[in-house]
Image (cartoon, rainbow, N blue to C red; front, side, top):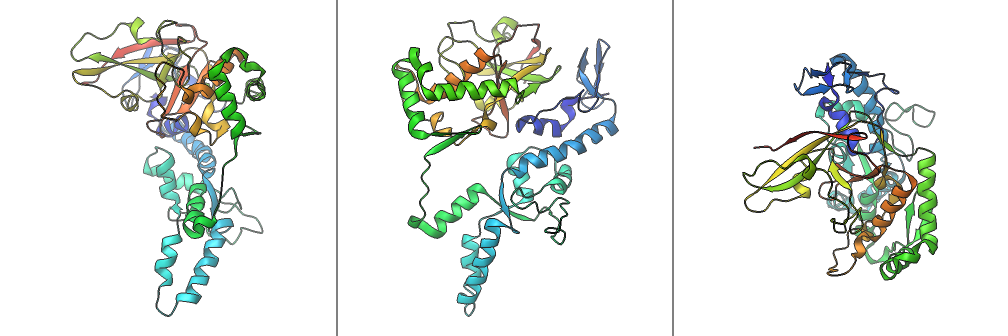
Length: 403
């Protein structure tokens, strides 16, 4: 009997906000006894926890999940060496060889422009998985532009080389960097819109929306951007295009305590009472929510310690499936609206307006919370839980500190 926490592939799925349904998709069993011990990590497998029967079942599930990870990782690829920017780079290489072949300058010139990522580095950059999974993931990877790689066999790709760890691909950021490096001031790309699901919203309208909310939030529902946000989020909820935290799923919360003090009480480790919280990225002033993470380690980055302080941790378990909106997967390029570092003492922080409104809409529609990439470390994911009942939807199972 092996607990789900012992699967690093599952942890990587978490961090990429990929849905995992242990029972309906993989037929995993539920523990019907009070408490069992995981044979790998020796942690408790509690009543109604999902588990792997043995290492063989664990490996079968993980092999299938490698394919799902590959699909998500491939979204980072703009093109491979077989298409798009990759073909442009081959043309550039040939051109430089012709013009600079006599003094061999072409190689250094080409290297200065040739900005790329190997598939091994791409996996390392976007996921936290053990090296032993890399080849299985790469076997499933395909270029989203031309379909090359990963066993893709068609009349157009049947003679292409199979992807391996050293295969060179080009991300959107690398293509963007090349354009600025190669074309310099002649390359002009001014972002005028951001994408929200399938809707394009002008930055001008978003700024107006944000500023009107700061001036007078009461009438913000009359703004056309509010109407777009509400309708699209409602559509996601009705079509179940969301992230569900399955029953028995664990997550963590941290609070800073004075070094050597007694552990905080259970009540203290839950979310604060209404009216106390200050404005945060995903809560308005005075609105309480349960901020937590799928990993206790990243909480140290979220909450840096001062002198004579230590962390108290709480581990939670999901009792009923929680429906979260994965905010990072439905927006594109709206970071400037939430990462603004302006000083807003004594007034509402503009940098949180958009996400505050999204949180309020999600709460009204019926989501249990939001899932989003950690600002402090994008390799991990955080949850902001609302619309829940203690010990019915979520229970606190441990309070502890690490020496």
